[in-house]
Amino acid sequence: MKLKLYLVTGNKHKYEEAKRIFNDTDIDLLMAPLGKFEIQSDDLKAIAWKAALHAYKILRTPIVVDDSGIFIDALNGFPGVYSSYVFRTLGNNGILKLMTGIKNRRACFKTSLAVIVPPLDTIIEDEVCGEIAEKPVGTLGFGFDPIFIPEGEKRTFAQMDIDEKNRYSHRARAFRRLVKWLRDNFML
Image 1 (tube, rainbow, N blue to C red):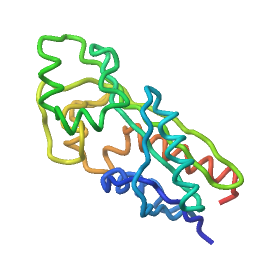
Image 2: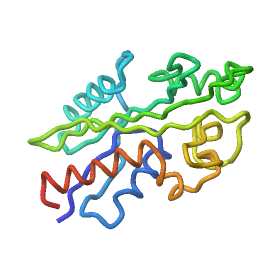
Image 3: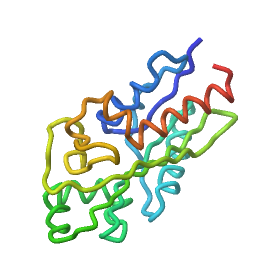
């Protein structure tokens, strides 16, 4: 029997990327019919954990919440936990404008997964580092994907299909670790 795990997100792109990680497993990842509750905090882990507790109180089923952000070294980690808001308000071009003339283009995408599968819960974190491109390139992916080039690549995430992006992505790395955690703890 497959374990049903609900990803609490309103972002279908996040869901599609995560769902690929669960192919060929005994875990059925479904998109939760619930918007993500979000507290204000400067800590991805705290945001994910509070959202997971809120979702679990409502759904009473195994859930996972993903909170992610891009942390740009030259901008002192900005936009970080505010990445979604900054993307909606400034977009990729706004970030690139902030980076005008800056040589240090290092940035890291970070993810915190808060997981509740009774009787256990955990938080899984991962990241991928790289650099901010000089201009947006590519049409795939979402969010800051057109301006992020992961280490070891010359292409942005937006130039990669889901399977290619999942070889590098912070989210894919965290979800692969989640699959291992579920298998180790629930003998799947």
